[in-house]
Image 1 (cartoon, rainbow, N blue to C red):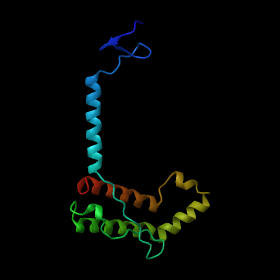
Image 2: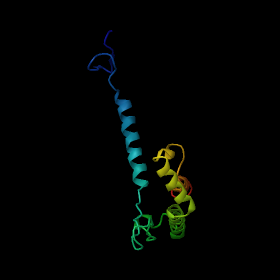
Image 3: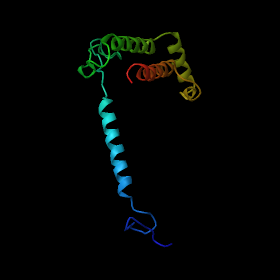
Image 4: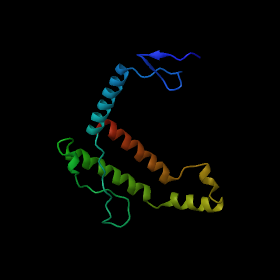
Length: 138
């Protein structure tokens, strides 16, 4: 194959054109836009609340990164709902005992065929977080 030249340059192997100054400027501009948009989308981490032991709960403390971005009540409602979901997931009842007995009886093979109640609630939590991120925290 004949080497191709573009704007007076040849690529190293001679089979791909070198990037033009115009495309490099466009790529640089796109990179600046991406950096700007990621600086606007700040990640905020909510700390766990260990005041009641190792029960999975989140602190209701309002992070300073969210000041002037969202209403305090929206975050409090989200955290209240998440904490309620985790209480539901960790609740021990008849279904939990039945799952444990079936797991022992089948050498835990049953979990290849079915989801535990805990896994089902975790899926609900994941869906809720996704929904909140799209509707409120986007």
